[in-house]
Image (cartoon, rainbow, N blue to C red; front, side, top):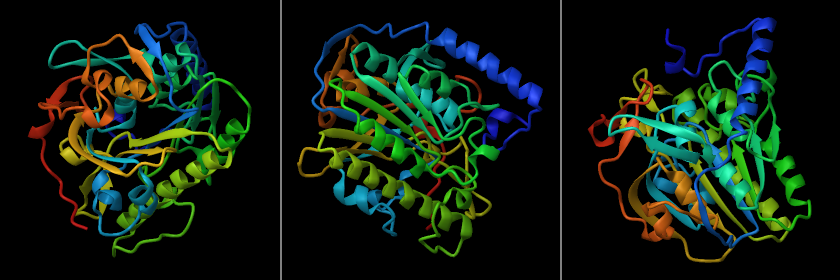
Length: 364
């Protein structure tokens, strides 16, 4: 079995192997953070005191009421978002491939292959721009499969992990995304003249959906797995509402963006959802903004790629980079729709045409 193709499985390691892996990864992280951002910054003009990036897990947008799902499992996002963007296509169908490209610069070797330039990530860019940077994670700090995201997280000046080892290991039992909120509260209570970038990495709607729930199942679709999945999305919506509430408590202006690392595809005759690179819906994810400015909600219906999203995020934070790209050259509402979007599959860095993938409609 290919470990990379089935990231939902957890693999046991002896104490010796775990310690060896830890020290190897630690050395890689130390080596990685010696390389700083190499993208030239032209100007810095943040409009908000706090910028928060919430990275969800395994959420396909057609299971959210904010995108038309029949059950209202995202009432806060649906009613309180400043922008609901319909059309973000993630770079890959799994966490360890997608997140590095979502928040780091992508280097296209040709029209068939791409690599992530990990040192040119949103955290290292924010560091250079004078932001105070934080990484709060309810996924593991060290795992047998996931290594790239912790390397990016290591650029943050401050980090907080609820779990020391695997995202799904023994240390993860009973640990829900709400454990990040007291740490967020602590960060915002500290006086600091610098603007803040806070990244919150959720376990969200990861596989084994019922185990992700902190509270009771809130929706009944006559299917246990799917009912838990829809309920897990509601818990993420509640967490976003609580995040905004904490921001308001300190009377500081803010801009928050929420997106998921990837979607999922139906399996077992629509009784489950799993990672699958063959379907478009494994790449269609929510992309939602919340802002302290009181403006009417915008709905943007444009298909755009998750590759080079780091440029869009930098521009959103008021950091102008010396790059030629629509994400850097336009305000959010003016970004043009993109054609011929490509995505990664399971086989290393090879690219595929997104619109040629199969479709997986939501039967619920």
